[in-house]
Image (spheres, rainbow, N blue to C red):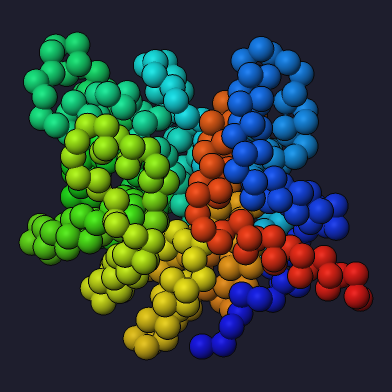
Length: 387
């Protein structure tokens, strides 16, 4: 298969010279681990102290990685990308809330996003994060089979109701719904809940999608068992596959608490696990949202599709990347006719900062990701200078 991901003209066609310079500056910063740590600490302090830094954040890191402060704010970005064949998944990226009122607010926001997606072809999926609907400690207690008291039981019932309301609304409006993954100690409860939603709403086709973090060595077995159950009980599986977002936290907790880490022993093992899950899903005609910034895994799925005679725009297969990253993958795939969607985070600047900080930390810990971004940006800057 020909190499399509080095075409920087297609990758950065939507970026002005100024935006390209900003991207270069940001990834140079992210490439420096000490600077990321210092920048994170300074930013957190400035926001907690209510210093006037939101304008600076908005003009730099926020506008590069986020679509706006609300969904209406995102529309210009959504429309601009869709002209080049890249769809959007509006991701309300407010994290770390713990109050019932806040969970209800996230529920209402998610329902609104489903309405948005229903009316706009450029937004093929809605999405939510389980920790936006309930306390992490509660998910953990349920997943571990702990006895809940009366108040906790009522609280958990509200979490279940939020899940069901969103999944039913997606089903009623024929909008596919991606449910993001969480840390392993709360994921069991999430998996059980999502399976119940799949069983209920995926009878005719996949509406509800779970997420598998393939840096976990147990996820392929989980997928195979779920497939057996779906075959027996008559429902369809939709799954977003990612490598994972909490590696350092997972490993540290495993060491601290003395249990085997759920994380694969090496990057190579994770890559093999990811590709094996992709192959299993394609072989068994499941719907897959391949969330990856890895070019080799992307080519792997493209080759599988070609071998099996699956058209590039087959509705069962989507490729996904984060907004502000891997444009060389997203826009070149779209130019070849594949289904591509960018996760487009949004929300108030202050509330989205935990998400942005996590993004920066992840980039510093993923070998080669930032250097690849920088090399592509440099190549495009040089190409433009030589015109």
